[in-house]
Amino acid sequence: MKSKSKILVIYTGGTIGMIKSELGTYVPFSVDGLLGYVPQIYTLGVDIVVESFEKPMDSALIGPKQWVTISKIISKNYDLVDGFVILHGTDTMAYTSSALSFLLRGLSKPVILTGAQVPIYEEKSDGVDNFINAIEIAGQGVVKEVALWFHKTLFKGACVTKSDSKSFSGFSSPNHEPLATKEKAIKYNKGAFDTGELDRIFFFSINAEILYINLLPSINKEIQAKVINENPIQGIVLSVFGSGTVPLIQEDLLTAALQDKNIPIIAVSECYRGGVEIGKYEAGSILNDLNVISGQKMTKEAAITKLMVAIGNFKNEQEIRNYLIQNQVGEF
Ligand code: ASP
Image (tube, rainbow, N blue to C red):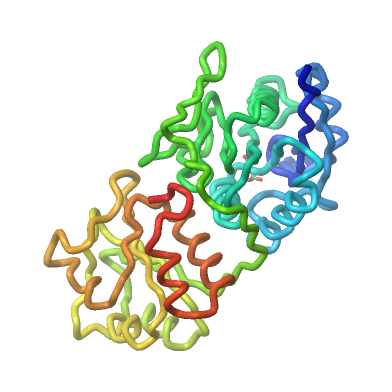
């Protein structure tokens, strides 16, 4: 008989475990309080071990430092458990799931992030359900990659975005199929799985000296040029219109700034769905002159974290570019 799966739950904070402060605002609370509210997780036929951030936090405060911390916790425990569940605030969970997807390559165990829109202590919380399902999926060990479970759906870690700030179905994967869905039982969609062909390489470096530029119709391009010229920026994610048009002409100071900087630039679409196709319109051809990398169907979360991981781990310009133009974990 197969022995029970052992799952490490990593508690980072987020609404799932929050309580109301005296001021009436939600604040993170202890992991012990949270676990006391979901005794069901101990009846699922898996062994559960828990590691909590010393100070659980609102995910608004989670970024590169915490992504590396989580990666290190996973690496340290990798051979000791069969899977991981990360409890996380929803606001930046898609950034963390994207970052972990690039940091933890070639996984052979599930790493499942989840959270809730309503605290577990409140009557109509989605937290209990999300937590239980995430544990079940981690325990089943079918998915061997970073994924995000939310409201009946398992999304690929580097293809998901927070799309609703209130509804229980708070996440979506606009350009990619989900890894699994649940009506009565969990139904896996194996066609969307990681091919499992990557060698296991865990990266622990992130370089956050990047800029996200939103090219809006009303934007002051001179100000953006100044920001680029006067700061030690190592890479840029450019949010462009539609399938890849931009309000840029050769004479712009912003065009010159982008050219002179000579750093990797990734274009992503400001549209929710569809991605970019550089070169389709004349009004986007300047992106080719600027040597911009097509973000294809990447979410902004994936583009930003992929760029940070690339710059953090490859020193050579060509290596960085090669990494960025290739599909790493299904993000294209
Ligand atoms: N502000 C909370 C957080 O991201 C929201 C949530 O968890 O739903 O930590």
